[in-house]
Figure (tube, one colour):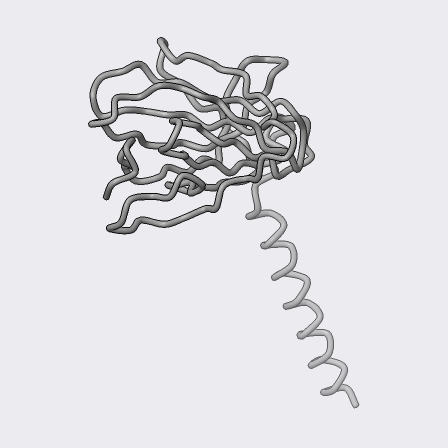
Length: 175
């Protein structure tokens, strides 16, 4: 009977020590990183554009992948997503689409970078969770763009990760 009691106490002591080591070894999160978001530095010359709601009745474009054929006018290329944001590029019309997917008080942001030296631009969706916003830009048809999706805090004007990057997307939609 005493042997069983010693075994039970040994198991209990071991479990307690293990639980204490886990608690002591796990760092506490700082108050300002409650959602795991970290500030992202944007280029100094970035143009911040406020996205607009698509015209009523406009369908969100088909999110397509890379193909050898020309992208159809209703196809959105370079679909990229990260926590709270999705984005893509519609080559016919040079439209950037930004989708806010999280109800967290922040906005979805889709940065657009070119391979021909044009300053970066960011399309901000301030329309709220579950909405799509568009930004219409005119890019060089013989250039490529790259998307960067992340979060934007309109109160502070700061951008936050997690973030994700697309590959290079031909502006003319021809791969």
